[in-house]
Image (cartoon, rainbow, N blue to C red; front, top):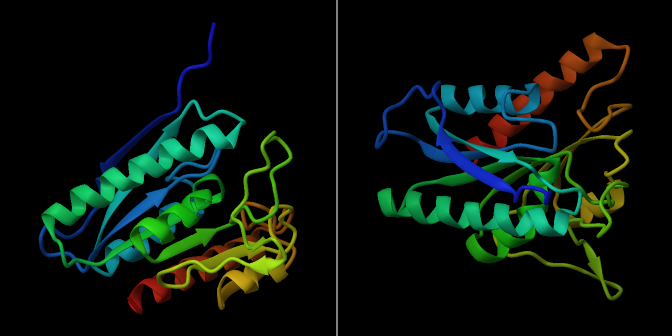
Length: 213
């Protein structure tokens, strides 16, 4: 039996605090592989923005293949549809995206097609070992650095994350926040206090980034 196609849907968060039309902005929160929008980094980032007057929409991705070159275009299309729909509701409103791991791979498309601010949580800058096509956010091509249009993204990542690269991250943006010894979930195994401290720092960084928009 063939694998089911990638399924992506976007819904309004039930914990939104402001009614439609009176928000500070709209934010789309997007998951990682096995890391949905109720996991800590995304849940608390959404809570922080909701408290600051943003309306939150959340993406769910099902049946994602290990071949990320198949998955990313589907997610890109869903983002395009979200931007178009939100722009018809408020053409001048603030828009922002928050992505974790898998969905950070949409950053090049978002930058070129929409020029939107993007919080990249544990971005895939080095290829994932399970992905046969080695999808990454390109930072260097043909000996030169890649320049993306639009606002510089925010990057939050742990130094023990195999998909992270400090030198490449700093070529991509000046908004880089690193967490020593933290893994791909920005957690330090065996150190819950440090992990919770990092969670608070990531949440504050996302809130601060959003407040500058």
